[in-house]
Length: 260
Image (tube, rainbow, N blue to C red; front, top):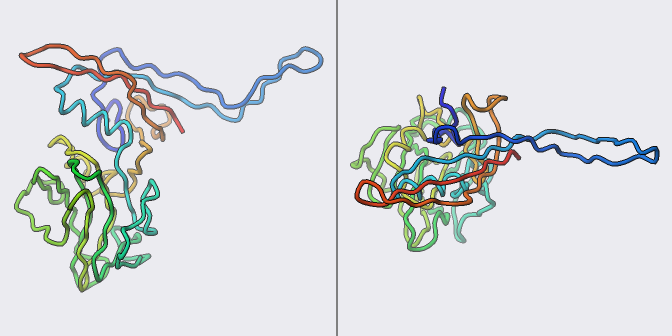
C-alpha cells in the first residue's frame, strides 16, 4: 500500500517531513468548584508534510491537486461537488440506475455544457461515455487534456475518438444524441503529469476519479500513514521553496491536510 495518497494519487512525501497533530473538537471550562471540565465531541488528525524538490511543472500540478482544485459531477443531480450548474440552454436528464456500476448518469439528447476551467487556462477532463443502445452497458473511460493527450480506460491513446466533447474558453460541451450517456465527469484546471490518468482510472475503473468518489475540494486520504485507513481532509499549500539544481530550478512544497 502507498505511504500516503490523496484522491488516489500517491503523494511523494519527502523523508522525515510528515507530522500528524491532534485537534480536539470541544471545549474545556472551569466549574464553580474550580475543577476543569472537558467536553470533547471528537478528535481530528491533521497532517503537515513537505514534498521533495521537483521540477516546476510537476510542483505546480501537485500544488493544485493538494489544494483541491477542480470539480466532479457524479450526476446524482446536475450540480458538481462545488455547486457548479450546467451552462444555460442545457439539454440533459438524470437516469437514476443505468450509469457505471448501476449509479446515476446523464442522458443528453442535445448539448450539455459545464465550465471546467477559467477562459484561457489549460484543462483536463475525465468522463465515462457510452453510445450503446442497451442502457447501462458499453461504457469507456476517457481522459482528455488541452495539450492533446488522451487516455482510454487508463491507457495512453491520443487517437481516441472524442468528437462528442469539446472545450472552448474553459467550457466543456458534451454533444448529445441517441443513446449518448455520460457519467462521473471530473475536471482539473491544468494538465496533469502523464503518470496520473492511469491512476485516475485505477484497476478496472476503480480509481477514485473514475469511480466518482474524488470530490474536490475534499481530499480522500489513504495509505499506511492513515491510522483509520481512510480520512477526508482539506488541503493547503503554505510555502514553496525554490532551489537551483540540475541546470534549472526545483521547487519544494510545504502542505497541510486538515481532517474535516
